[in-house]
Structures are given as structure tokens and as C-alpha cells.
Length: 500
Image (cartoon, rainbow, N blue to C red; front, side, top):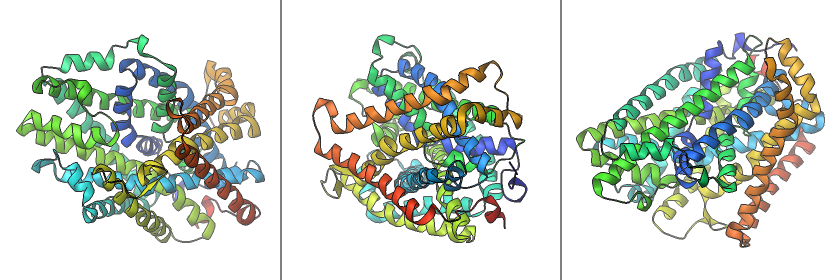
């Protein structure tokens, strides 16, 4: 297929693409979702399962999504339309998902900026106060959005690629430095390492397997259009298979290093303070913004420096992720409506920031135990996160595998990739089977059991859970209707429109 791409705006180098895609994958999911899910699901045994899932379900799905983008050299809607005119609605869902994610991810990004800025003055006990201060939450969310907006406005080559070449090495250096320091703390470190690195396979349950599959899937930015978009900005000289391997290795390495930084530190804090680790809050937002500040404070004066570098590292990871998911909608708006990048990105950033305001306020009520501004029993952030991560993202990833494995055909897809210089070696037959059968089946399991867990949490029927599922599939239905009535028979643009 003709390459309309990179000289005029795509990735200028293979390493630029790998670092940008790795930046998309490496985010808050690696630095705090992975550690707290590890704590919830048996420690080292979960880590083992997670690595296996990245190798199988994650890598194959990523190859499919990058291939879809490069094959089309266009936004996700056009990418699916080029396969079959009736599939374009999948691309519209792939655009809607990251747009929703930006609305709440920006709030969490604002939290990381605030905690980084406040490291030297002490963050312990400040979570509730900050969360309850509406003007502060809005201000720091705005700062975070502007940071991402500046990068996306500059374009792929001059913005995203250049930023990734700086941010990703900086993130890695900071993370390694934090890990080295934490490993030298002394008391409690050995116990933390044993918990994190020595698996007890008796801890493995069916739920932990599903959790590992889901975490591998989410941490690689799959099912949200980002890899399709980044793939569309690559040319034939960039090897999809090798690049996917590098992205998965980099992403997994950061997640594993995050665990090495957090678990020994938490066990050290517990040993020093005489606290049972089971009494510490290692779940979700509380791990990052409540428990870890206590850990850093217990280290003493040097702990404030380490805390600053830790949260600076988290800010970098958050920005590198949000620029990729903001780019998904921006690319479509630019190519479909033929408007400038600056206008398109400003529109996307403005709309998502406006939505983020009530999201941040709702989260503040939750942090302070106030039962206000909830949707089906959840604060707005948790609600939007559940809609996207539990329901819509697996649907998008499943359909990308089906599009490549069945509509294009796994054999034809691999032949097209091989013709461009990609080599699968002895794994070709294995990849074909994974692409067509195994990966879709595993993603379908994530979706099915995710829905069951929502509707029947703990085996008991939940009307709120059913409501969340119905709203999620209503969003999917709206995207199908919008595509059918307004986009199916219309030009939805490609990279040549953006270059022009």
C-alpha cells in the first residue's frame, strides 16, 4: 500500500516510535495499578502471570492494532473502513474511549503534579484536604492538561516524538535511582523482595488470572485506538514485530521496577513503625497519595528528595500516556474536518477539561466521605473508569483482533507484514493461531467475567452494576448509530489530509 506518511509529519525514526508507543503504554497503570493489583492477587504469583499475559495476549493484540494503523495510514475510523465499509463504527468507539479516559486521567494527572510540587513541604495527610479544595483540583488539572496540550499541538514528529525521546529515558533513570535507594534502606527490604519476587503458586486463583490478563491488556494501551494512531504514523522501514517486542519489554520493565520501588519501601516502613503490612491501604488512589507519602516521610530528610523524584517520575508517565490518548481524537478531528492541529487539539483539550471539573469535584467528595455526585453508586472518576476499562476497551481490542484475524485474514495479514520486512521466524504459525483464535478468546473472557463481576459482585445481584453495563453498551450503540447515519458514506480522511 502507498505510504503517504512520515516525511511530512509521522515518526522520523524507529526508536522515536518505540519510545512514543512505550510512553503511551507506560502510565499510572504501571506505577500504581500494577503494584496494588499485585498486592490484591498474591504478590509474586500475580507478577508471573502478568508477564505471561503480556507475552501472549498483549503482544499479539498490539501487533494487530499497529498493523491496522500502518496499513491504512489514517485515523481509526478510516482504518476500519478500508477493511470493510461496515466496520468503521469500531474506529469511532476506539476514538470515544480515549476521549472519555482523558476526562478523568487529567484529574489524576493533576494530583501527581500537586504532590510533586508539594514534596518538600510534606504530603502526608494532605490527600483529603487537597481533594476537598475544588479550586486547587481544577487548577492542577488545568496545569496537567496544558502540559499535554503543548506537546500534542506541536505534532507527531516535533511534539510527541521529541518529548518521548526526553521523557522516557528520564522516567527510566528516575525509576532506577528510586529503586536503588529503596533497596538500600535496610530493615524490611528483604521481606518486601521475598513477597514481590518469590511466587507462592497456591495463591493463584481464577480471579487472579483474569486480573493479570486485564492488567497486561490495560497497561499496554490496547483497545483505545492509541496504537492504531501511532501505527498510522509509521512507515515500512519500522519493523512492527521488533517494535512490539521492544515496547512490551520496556512497559513490563517499568511495571516490574515500580514494584521493586514500592514493596520494599512499604515493608521497610512497616518494620520501622511496627505496623502490620495488612493494615496499610495499598488499594488504588490511596496507595499513591496516602500510603507512599507516609513511607517517604518515615525515611527522614532524604525521603523528601526521593518523594519529589518519585512524583516527578509519575508526572512524566502520566503526561506521556495522556498525549497519546489525546492524539486519538485530535487526529480524527484534523483529518475528518480538515482543520489545523492547534484548533483540533484545543477543542479536544477544552471539552475534556470541562468534563474533568465535575469528575475532580466528585472524587473530592469520595475522598472526604461525602455521599454526593455519584452515578450508580460510584464517583464520576470510578464510573467513567469502569465504563471504559471494564466494558469498552476489551470490546475494542477484541474487534481489532477479529478485524485482522478474520476480515483481513490472519494469513493475509502476516503475508502483508512479511512483505514489508517483518519476520516472525518459527513463531509464524503460533502467531497466526494466537491472532485468529486464542487472543480473541482470552479478551472475550476478560469482557464476560468483567460484566459478571459488575452485575453479580460477590455473587449477589447489583442493580447499580447492571446500570453501568447498560450505560456502557448504550455508548457503544450511540457510536454505531452516529457512524451509520453520518460517517458510513462520507470521507473520514487520512494522513494525506493532515499533511496537506
